[in-house]
Length: 136
Image (cartoon, rainbow, N blue to C red; front, side):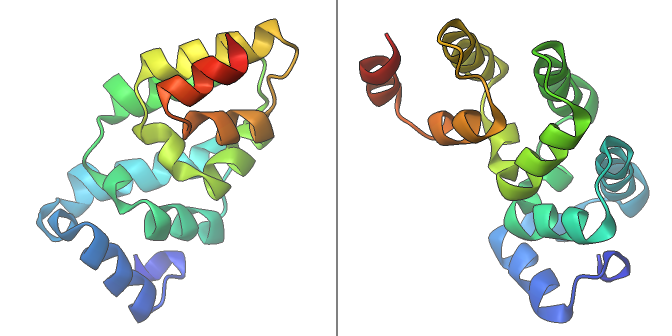
């Protein structure tokens, strides 16, 4: 993590938020996620910010069965890779929501011509009741 530019306090903060991080294999868990984030187009600073904000990404979610499909859903909705990088850099917790929730929220926004990275970030955190009241 320090190799990404995270200082000791950022590493400590990530470990405090997600202590299981210490039990993960660097080769099997950490490096593949870091490489995937970089392959999306993130620089080291953005990767460090994602990990510092949302350390669960480093092992709590399956890369192949969870993270990649969610990003593919956004790509299928015509988000550019740069929009996805921007969105995930600011709101990495987006990846913690279910694919079903992501798809439903994106569909509702698209139907209203509001499907942008900014709107998506705002509506993902809404409760189902608040989302329904605004968009259904």
